[in-house]
Image: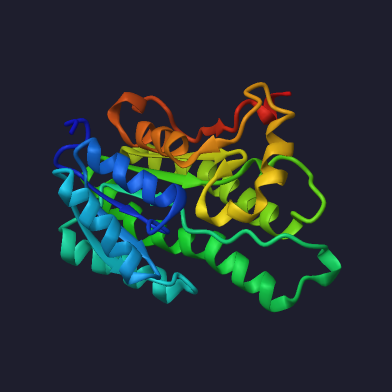
Amino acid sequence: MSAELSGTTALVTGATSGIGRAAAIELARRGAKVVVSGRDEARGQQVVDGIREAGGEALFLAGDLSDAASARSLANRAKEQAGQVDVLVNNAGIFPVGPTHETSEQDFESVYAINVKAPFFLVAELAPDMASRGHGAIVNVTTMAAELGASGASLYGSSKAALTLLTKAWAAEYGPFGVRVNAVSPGPTRTEGTSGMEEKLKAIASASPAGRVGTAEEIASAIAYLATDAAGFIHGAILAVDGGRTAV
């Protein structure tokens, strides 16, 4: 265990699997008390148990993040049960793909609710408290699809593009009060959620300098870095962790 984040509490959304789970484990390894949040209590408790077995501190809070009320509720429950939130990782997201003309209004509402509205109101609830203490870190998880036009990715990519802009706007809004807001932008990453997309992941990765698919742990390492004081002079950055795909 490291002491980089000792004495801090981190709330990680979508932390029951994939990148979120890896981020929760990495933040705990660096000394943070982690509030693991997600919809599946059984999987969430497994993450908590694993962190505790490794000597870390964690607790699970359920949250579906389907609207502003659920986001505000999660933020307030995290403050009540953990004392305060020093690090917020907005990781929860859904990533449907398909033609624009086949996208229903319900699909649109669901994607923007989880990918944009939930982070917005979590920040609205937690950033002012961080600002009042003069210290805090917010890390948003976006995607390279927010920067590259791709057929079938109009809904998902546009929602994450909104989060990219919010990252910069929040950096300008809360940075002067000691709250750093940044984002990690993953490329093709192997997780439970992409398990049925192996060939597509490999095809995307083949066009990158790294030439391979990334791991959840590699994304988590970047998230944790942005949460630490080692990234103290980084505000409003979108850190590409995509094997160089958006660089070429």
